[in-house]
Picture (spheres, one colour):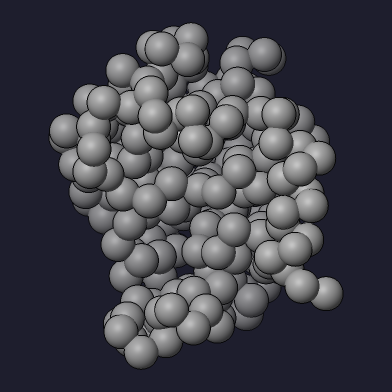
Length: 211
């Protein structure tokens, strides 16, 4: 099966559903920002959230908030909330503007700063779902144990870009990135606390449940 053809076919069916990625980017004033998820990942997040109905969600890596809005449109319907962490203050400010424009700002709390410092400081709060798409992929394995710690039993851990190691455009020029993602993937696959798999959508989407 040709995955590119499959993706085009799926997008032709579902392109009018959910949050339109192209329109979202065009409505964003900021010109330079980190990458955002593809529409198929956005739809997958929404389906997963309709299925699991998480009340308290942690997102690591906001960028301009496209994935945040995709998730918020679901959790808003049943009174859930999202805490999202963004390193870059300018990008976080743009994300907040986007949240207001999309009518989901009251559902989202934005924390600006280094996730590697913020998450270890979380003590009593626990999350029903964690979505990780931080720009610096070296953080994936470094944040892993704390993510599992703050995730409730039965909670959902989702991570984007986990098929980077088998994507040709990354193999030669991003050795450190590949090594970090490989390490993270192995940690998830080997951890007895998790049931997990990687879906070949976007640039690879890891989905795991904490037992």
